[in-house]
Length: 116
Image (cartoon, rainbow, N blue to C red; front, side, top):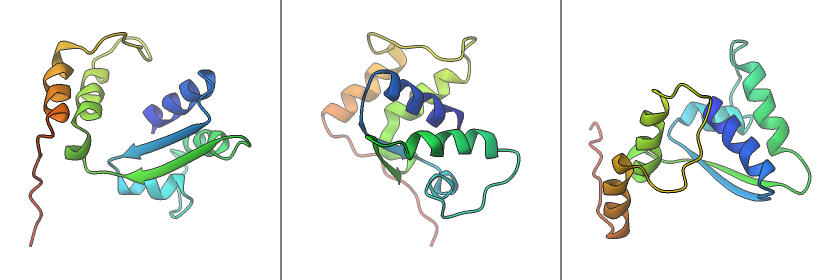
């Protein structure tokens, strides 16, 4: 949720007025779309996200995707868990991400096992 808020703020700062936010949490998608009740613990961050999304002159599509559908984001999220600063903007892909970017560029599929 904090990553979504930071991403929305960054997009606004960069004056990006159309944004597609894909997250791998069905619950968070529902919360951002007002389809689910939020818990008090996360309400402040969630409300800040919603305020940004609902601003005029701003189009934000919120949708779910499985982690396997966006391996680059998953890799960056894992790297972000170990950061000391609140966020970092990279000019070039990190070595940990290059392999995944290459796999995306040649359309490698990432299967997901689903229960019966």
